[in-house]
Amino acid sequence: MTSDTTKKITDLYQDILKRSPDKTGLYYFVSKINKRELTFEDVKKILNESDEAKSLKEYTHYSDKYWNDLEVVGKYKNKLATGNENVHWIGDILNRFKEYLPFDDVLVVGCGNGWLERQLYDLGIGKHFDAFDMSEKYVNEAKELKQSRAIDYFLDDINSMSKIENNKYDVALDHLFKAIKVQPNNVDAVFAICNTYTKKRYYTDAITYCETALKLNPKDSDFMNRLAWLYAKKGINIDLGIKLIQKTLKVYPNRSDYIDTLSELYYAQGDIVEAVKEIRKAINLKPDHAYYKQQLWKFKNVAPKSMMTQTGKAES
Image (cartoon, rainbow, N blue to C red; front, side, top):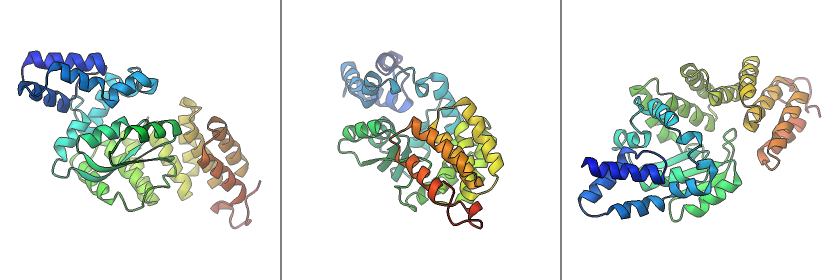
């Protein structure tokens, strides 16, 4: 691997993708050039025609100003996933789990226009992907861009995750447990276990891992939101759940999913008036969101467990 070749490829990445190359991509292109199987012009063409490059050109959501593309954020994510800020998390998957690859099923939450799972699929990390997002626009784009890849896209909300088979990701749990055995402070793996248990509706186990994730990263708003939502579903620690979600809403007052969690907590508490008030705020922010409309109907027509002994129907 010559330094001159490495520098030229690095410059192409910076110019086209606005980032440094990951180890896997760098090694691949350098080896191809050294074997005279590709030229620098070929590499330039490949990068320009990549989904990532198209995303940068067509969507401000994936521009170099998007938080996920900031170098400091990338290093932070790498450190959480691998323990080393300079080891890219995708390359780490390819190296650490190579005896398990490709995984049979991979779930991507908040897929956007799908560039990530297309990249993971092309790298051979998974045989089949399920991916969802709240945005119909991005899901439709993802469906068009997937081509013949084995990726199923659908609209869903992480708070419901109602369209995934309950037992589909049991194997994923096994791999996650192995990951935290090696790296017990791997907060991403711990939170992933929480989310997997949440999908399976094993809420007690989910709470245990979510509380652990929050101890590892006490300022993470998504961890606070998930834990508060789980408290609501179990009908426990409601006051603590309300404090957690109100803390996140001070920072992100227009996050409809956080507002939905607050409404769920009020509902679990038996405060139907406040539950309806909050879910209407979420609907105002996302008027076409079917899940929030379902929530409103539930709050008006189905009594929470806390009120079951008092009346058979919730207050309007």
